[in-house]
Image (cartoon, rainbow, N blue to C red; front, side, top):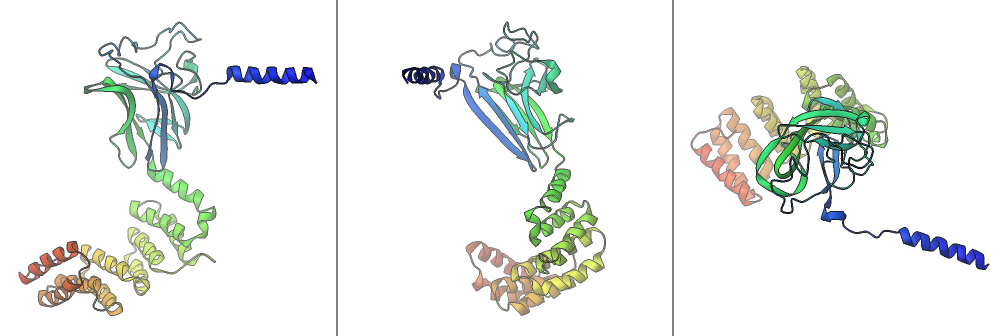
Length: 367
């Protein structure tokens, strides 16, 4: 029994001797994570932020040497910079991307940089778990890209990564430290990825809701892609057993797809079926779209249908004012605008309506 006690005590003592409590990183470097979503692609960078700490003019080319160096420790005799401090800087992509126009598969990578005052090399390595670049091996490189090294006027005390120049399908990842920036562009094929995501999601529990099929169909119309598939999705949102619903949303989405396919007669027939099912705001919004498309008669009919369903309220009085204005009957339009004025829900709408009334009094179209 005594031996068992001593053995247990020794084991516990050994564990306690090697237990490390949580403290800030060595050297006062700040641990950081920064991420961005491009389209539906998540990018996450995990790194440690060294500080300039009075070493102005001694960072680039001295503390961070040019190119590849032998650091005197580890297995690498030609190592790049770890793009940070302490353990590996890592970057993770949730989908396939392109970096500076070159393909890179989804995954987590060690991020290294071979600095040069004119053109630096960004390295994405399969090794994302080592400490620094002491064990860097170029055989583990997945991608290398060369980018311009950019001097900056402002000083960045603590090294950081920042996402700049964002668009719907791209962003520039910029490493900034002292008075230097090393940027690289990441792009995604958003349309392709979104459609692939829809196809996966529509096969799981989300596919048991008409709204999901309608949303996917609307995306194809809005982006003018895969319209045949989009029309099939729209049909499912309306007619699929157990989940399909014939409502304003599903029918108007189908009409959008048909319009993009050039089948305007079919689209108009679907919208005639949709209009009686719409809410006041839905019908008003559709009528406004028709005005933009210069389809004055169709817009008038939609505004009139809405007024008959919802008589003498702010939205439909405004709709009739726009409808008559579009036909050039400013006197009749003015009557409805004046009816709408005391119904205005807030100051913004009231101010806008007063402007419209003035235009109508001057014989000007308000659309």
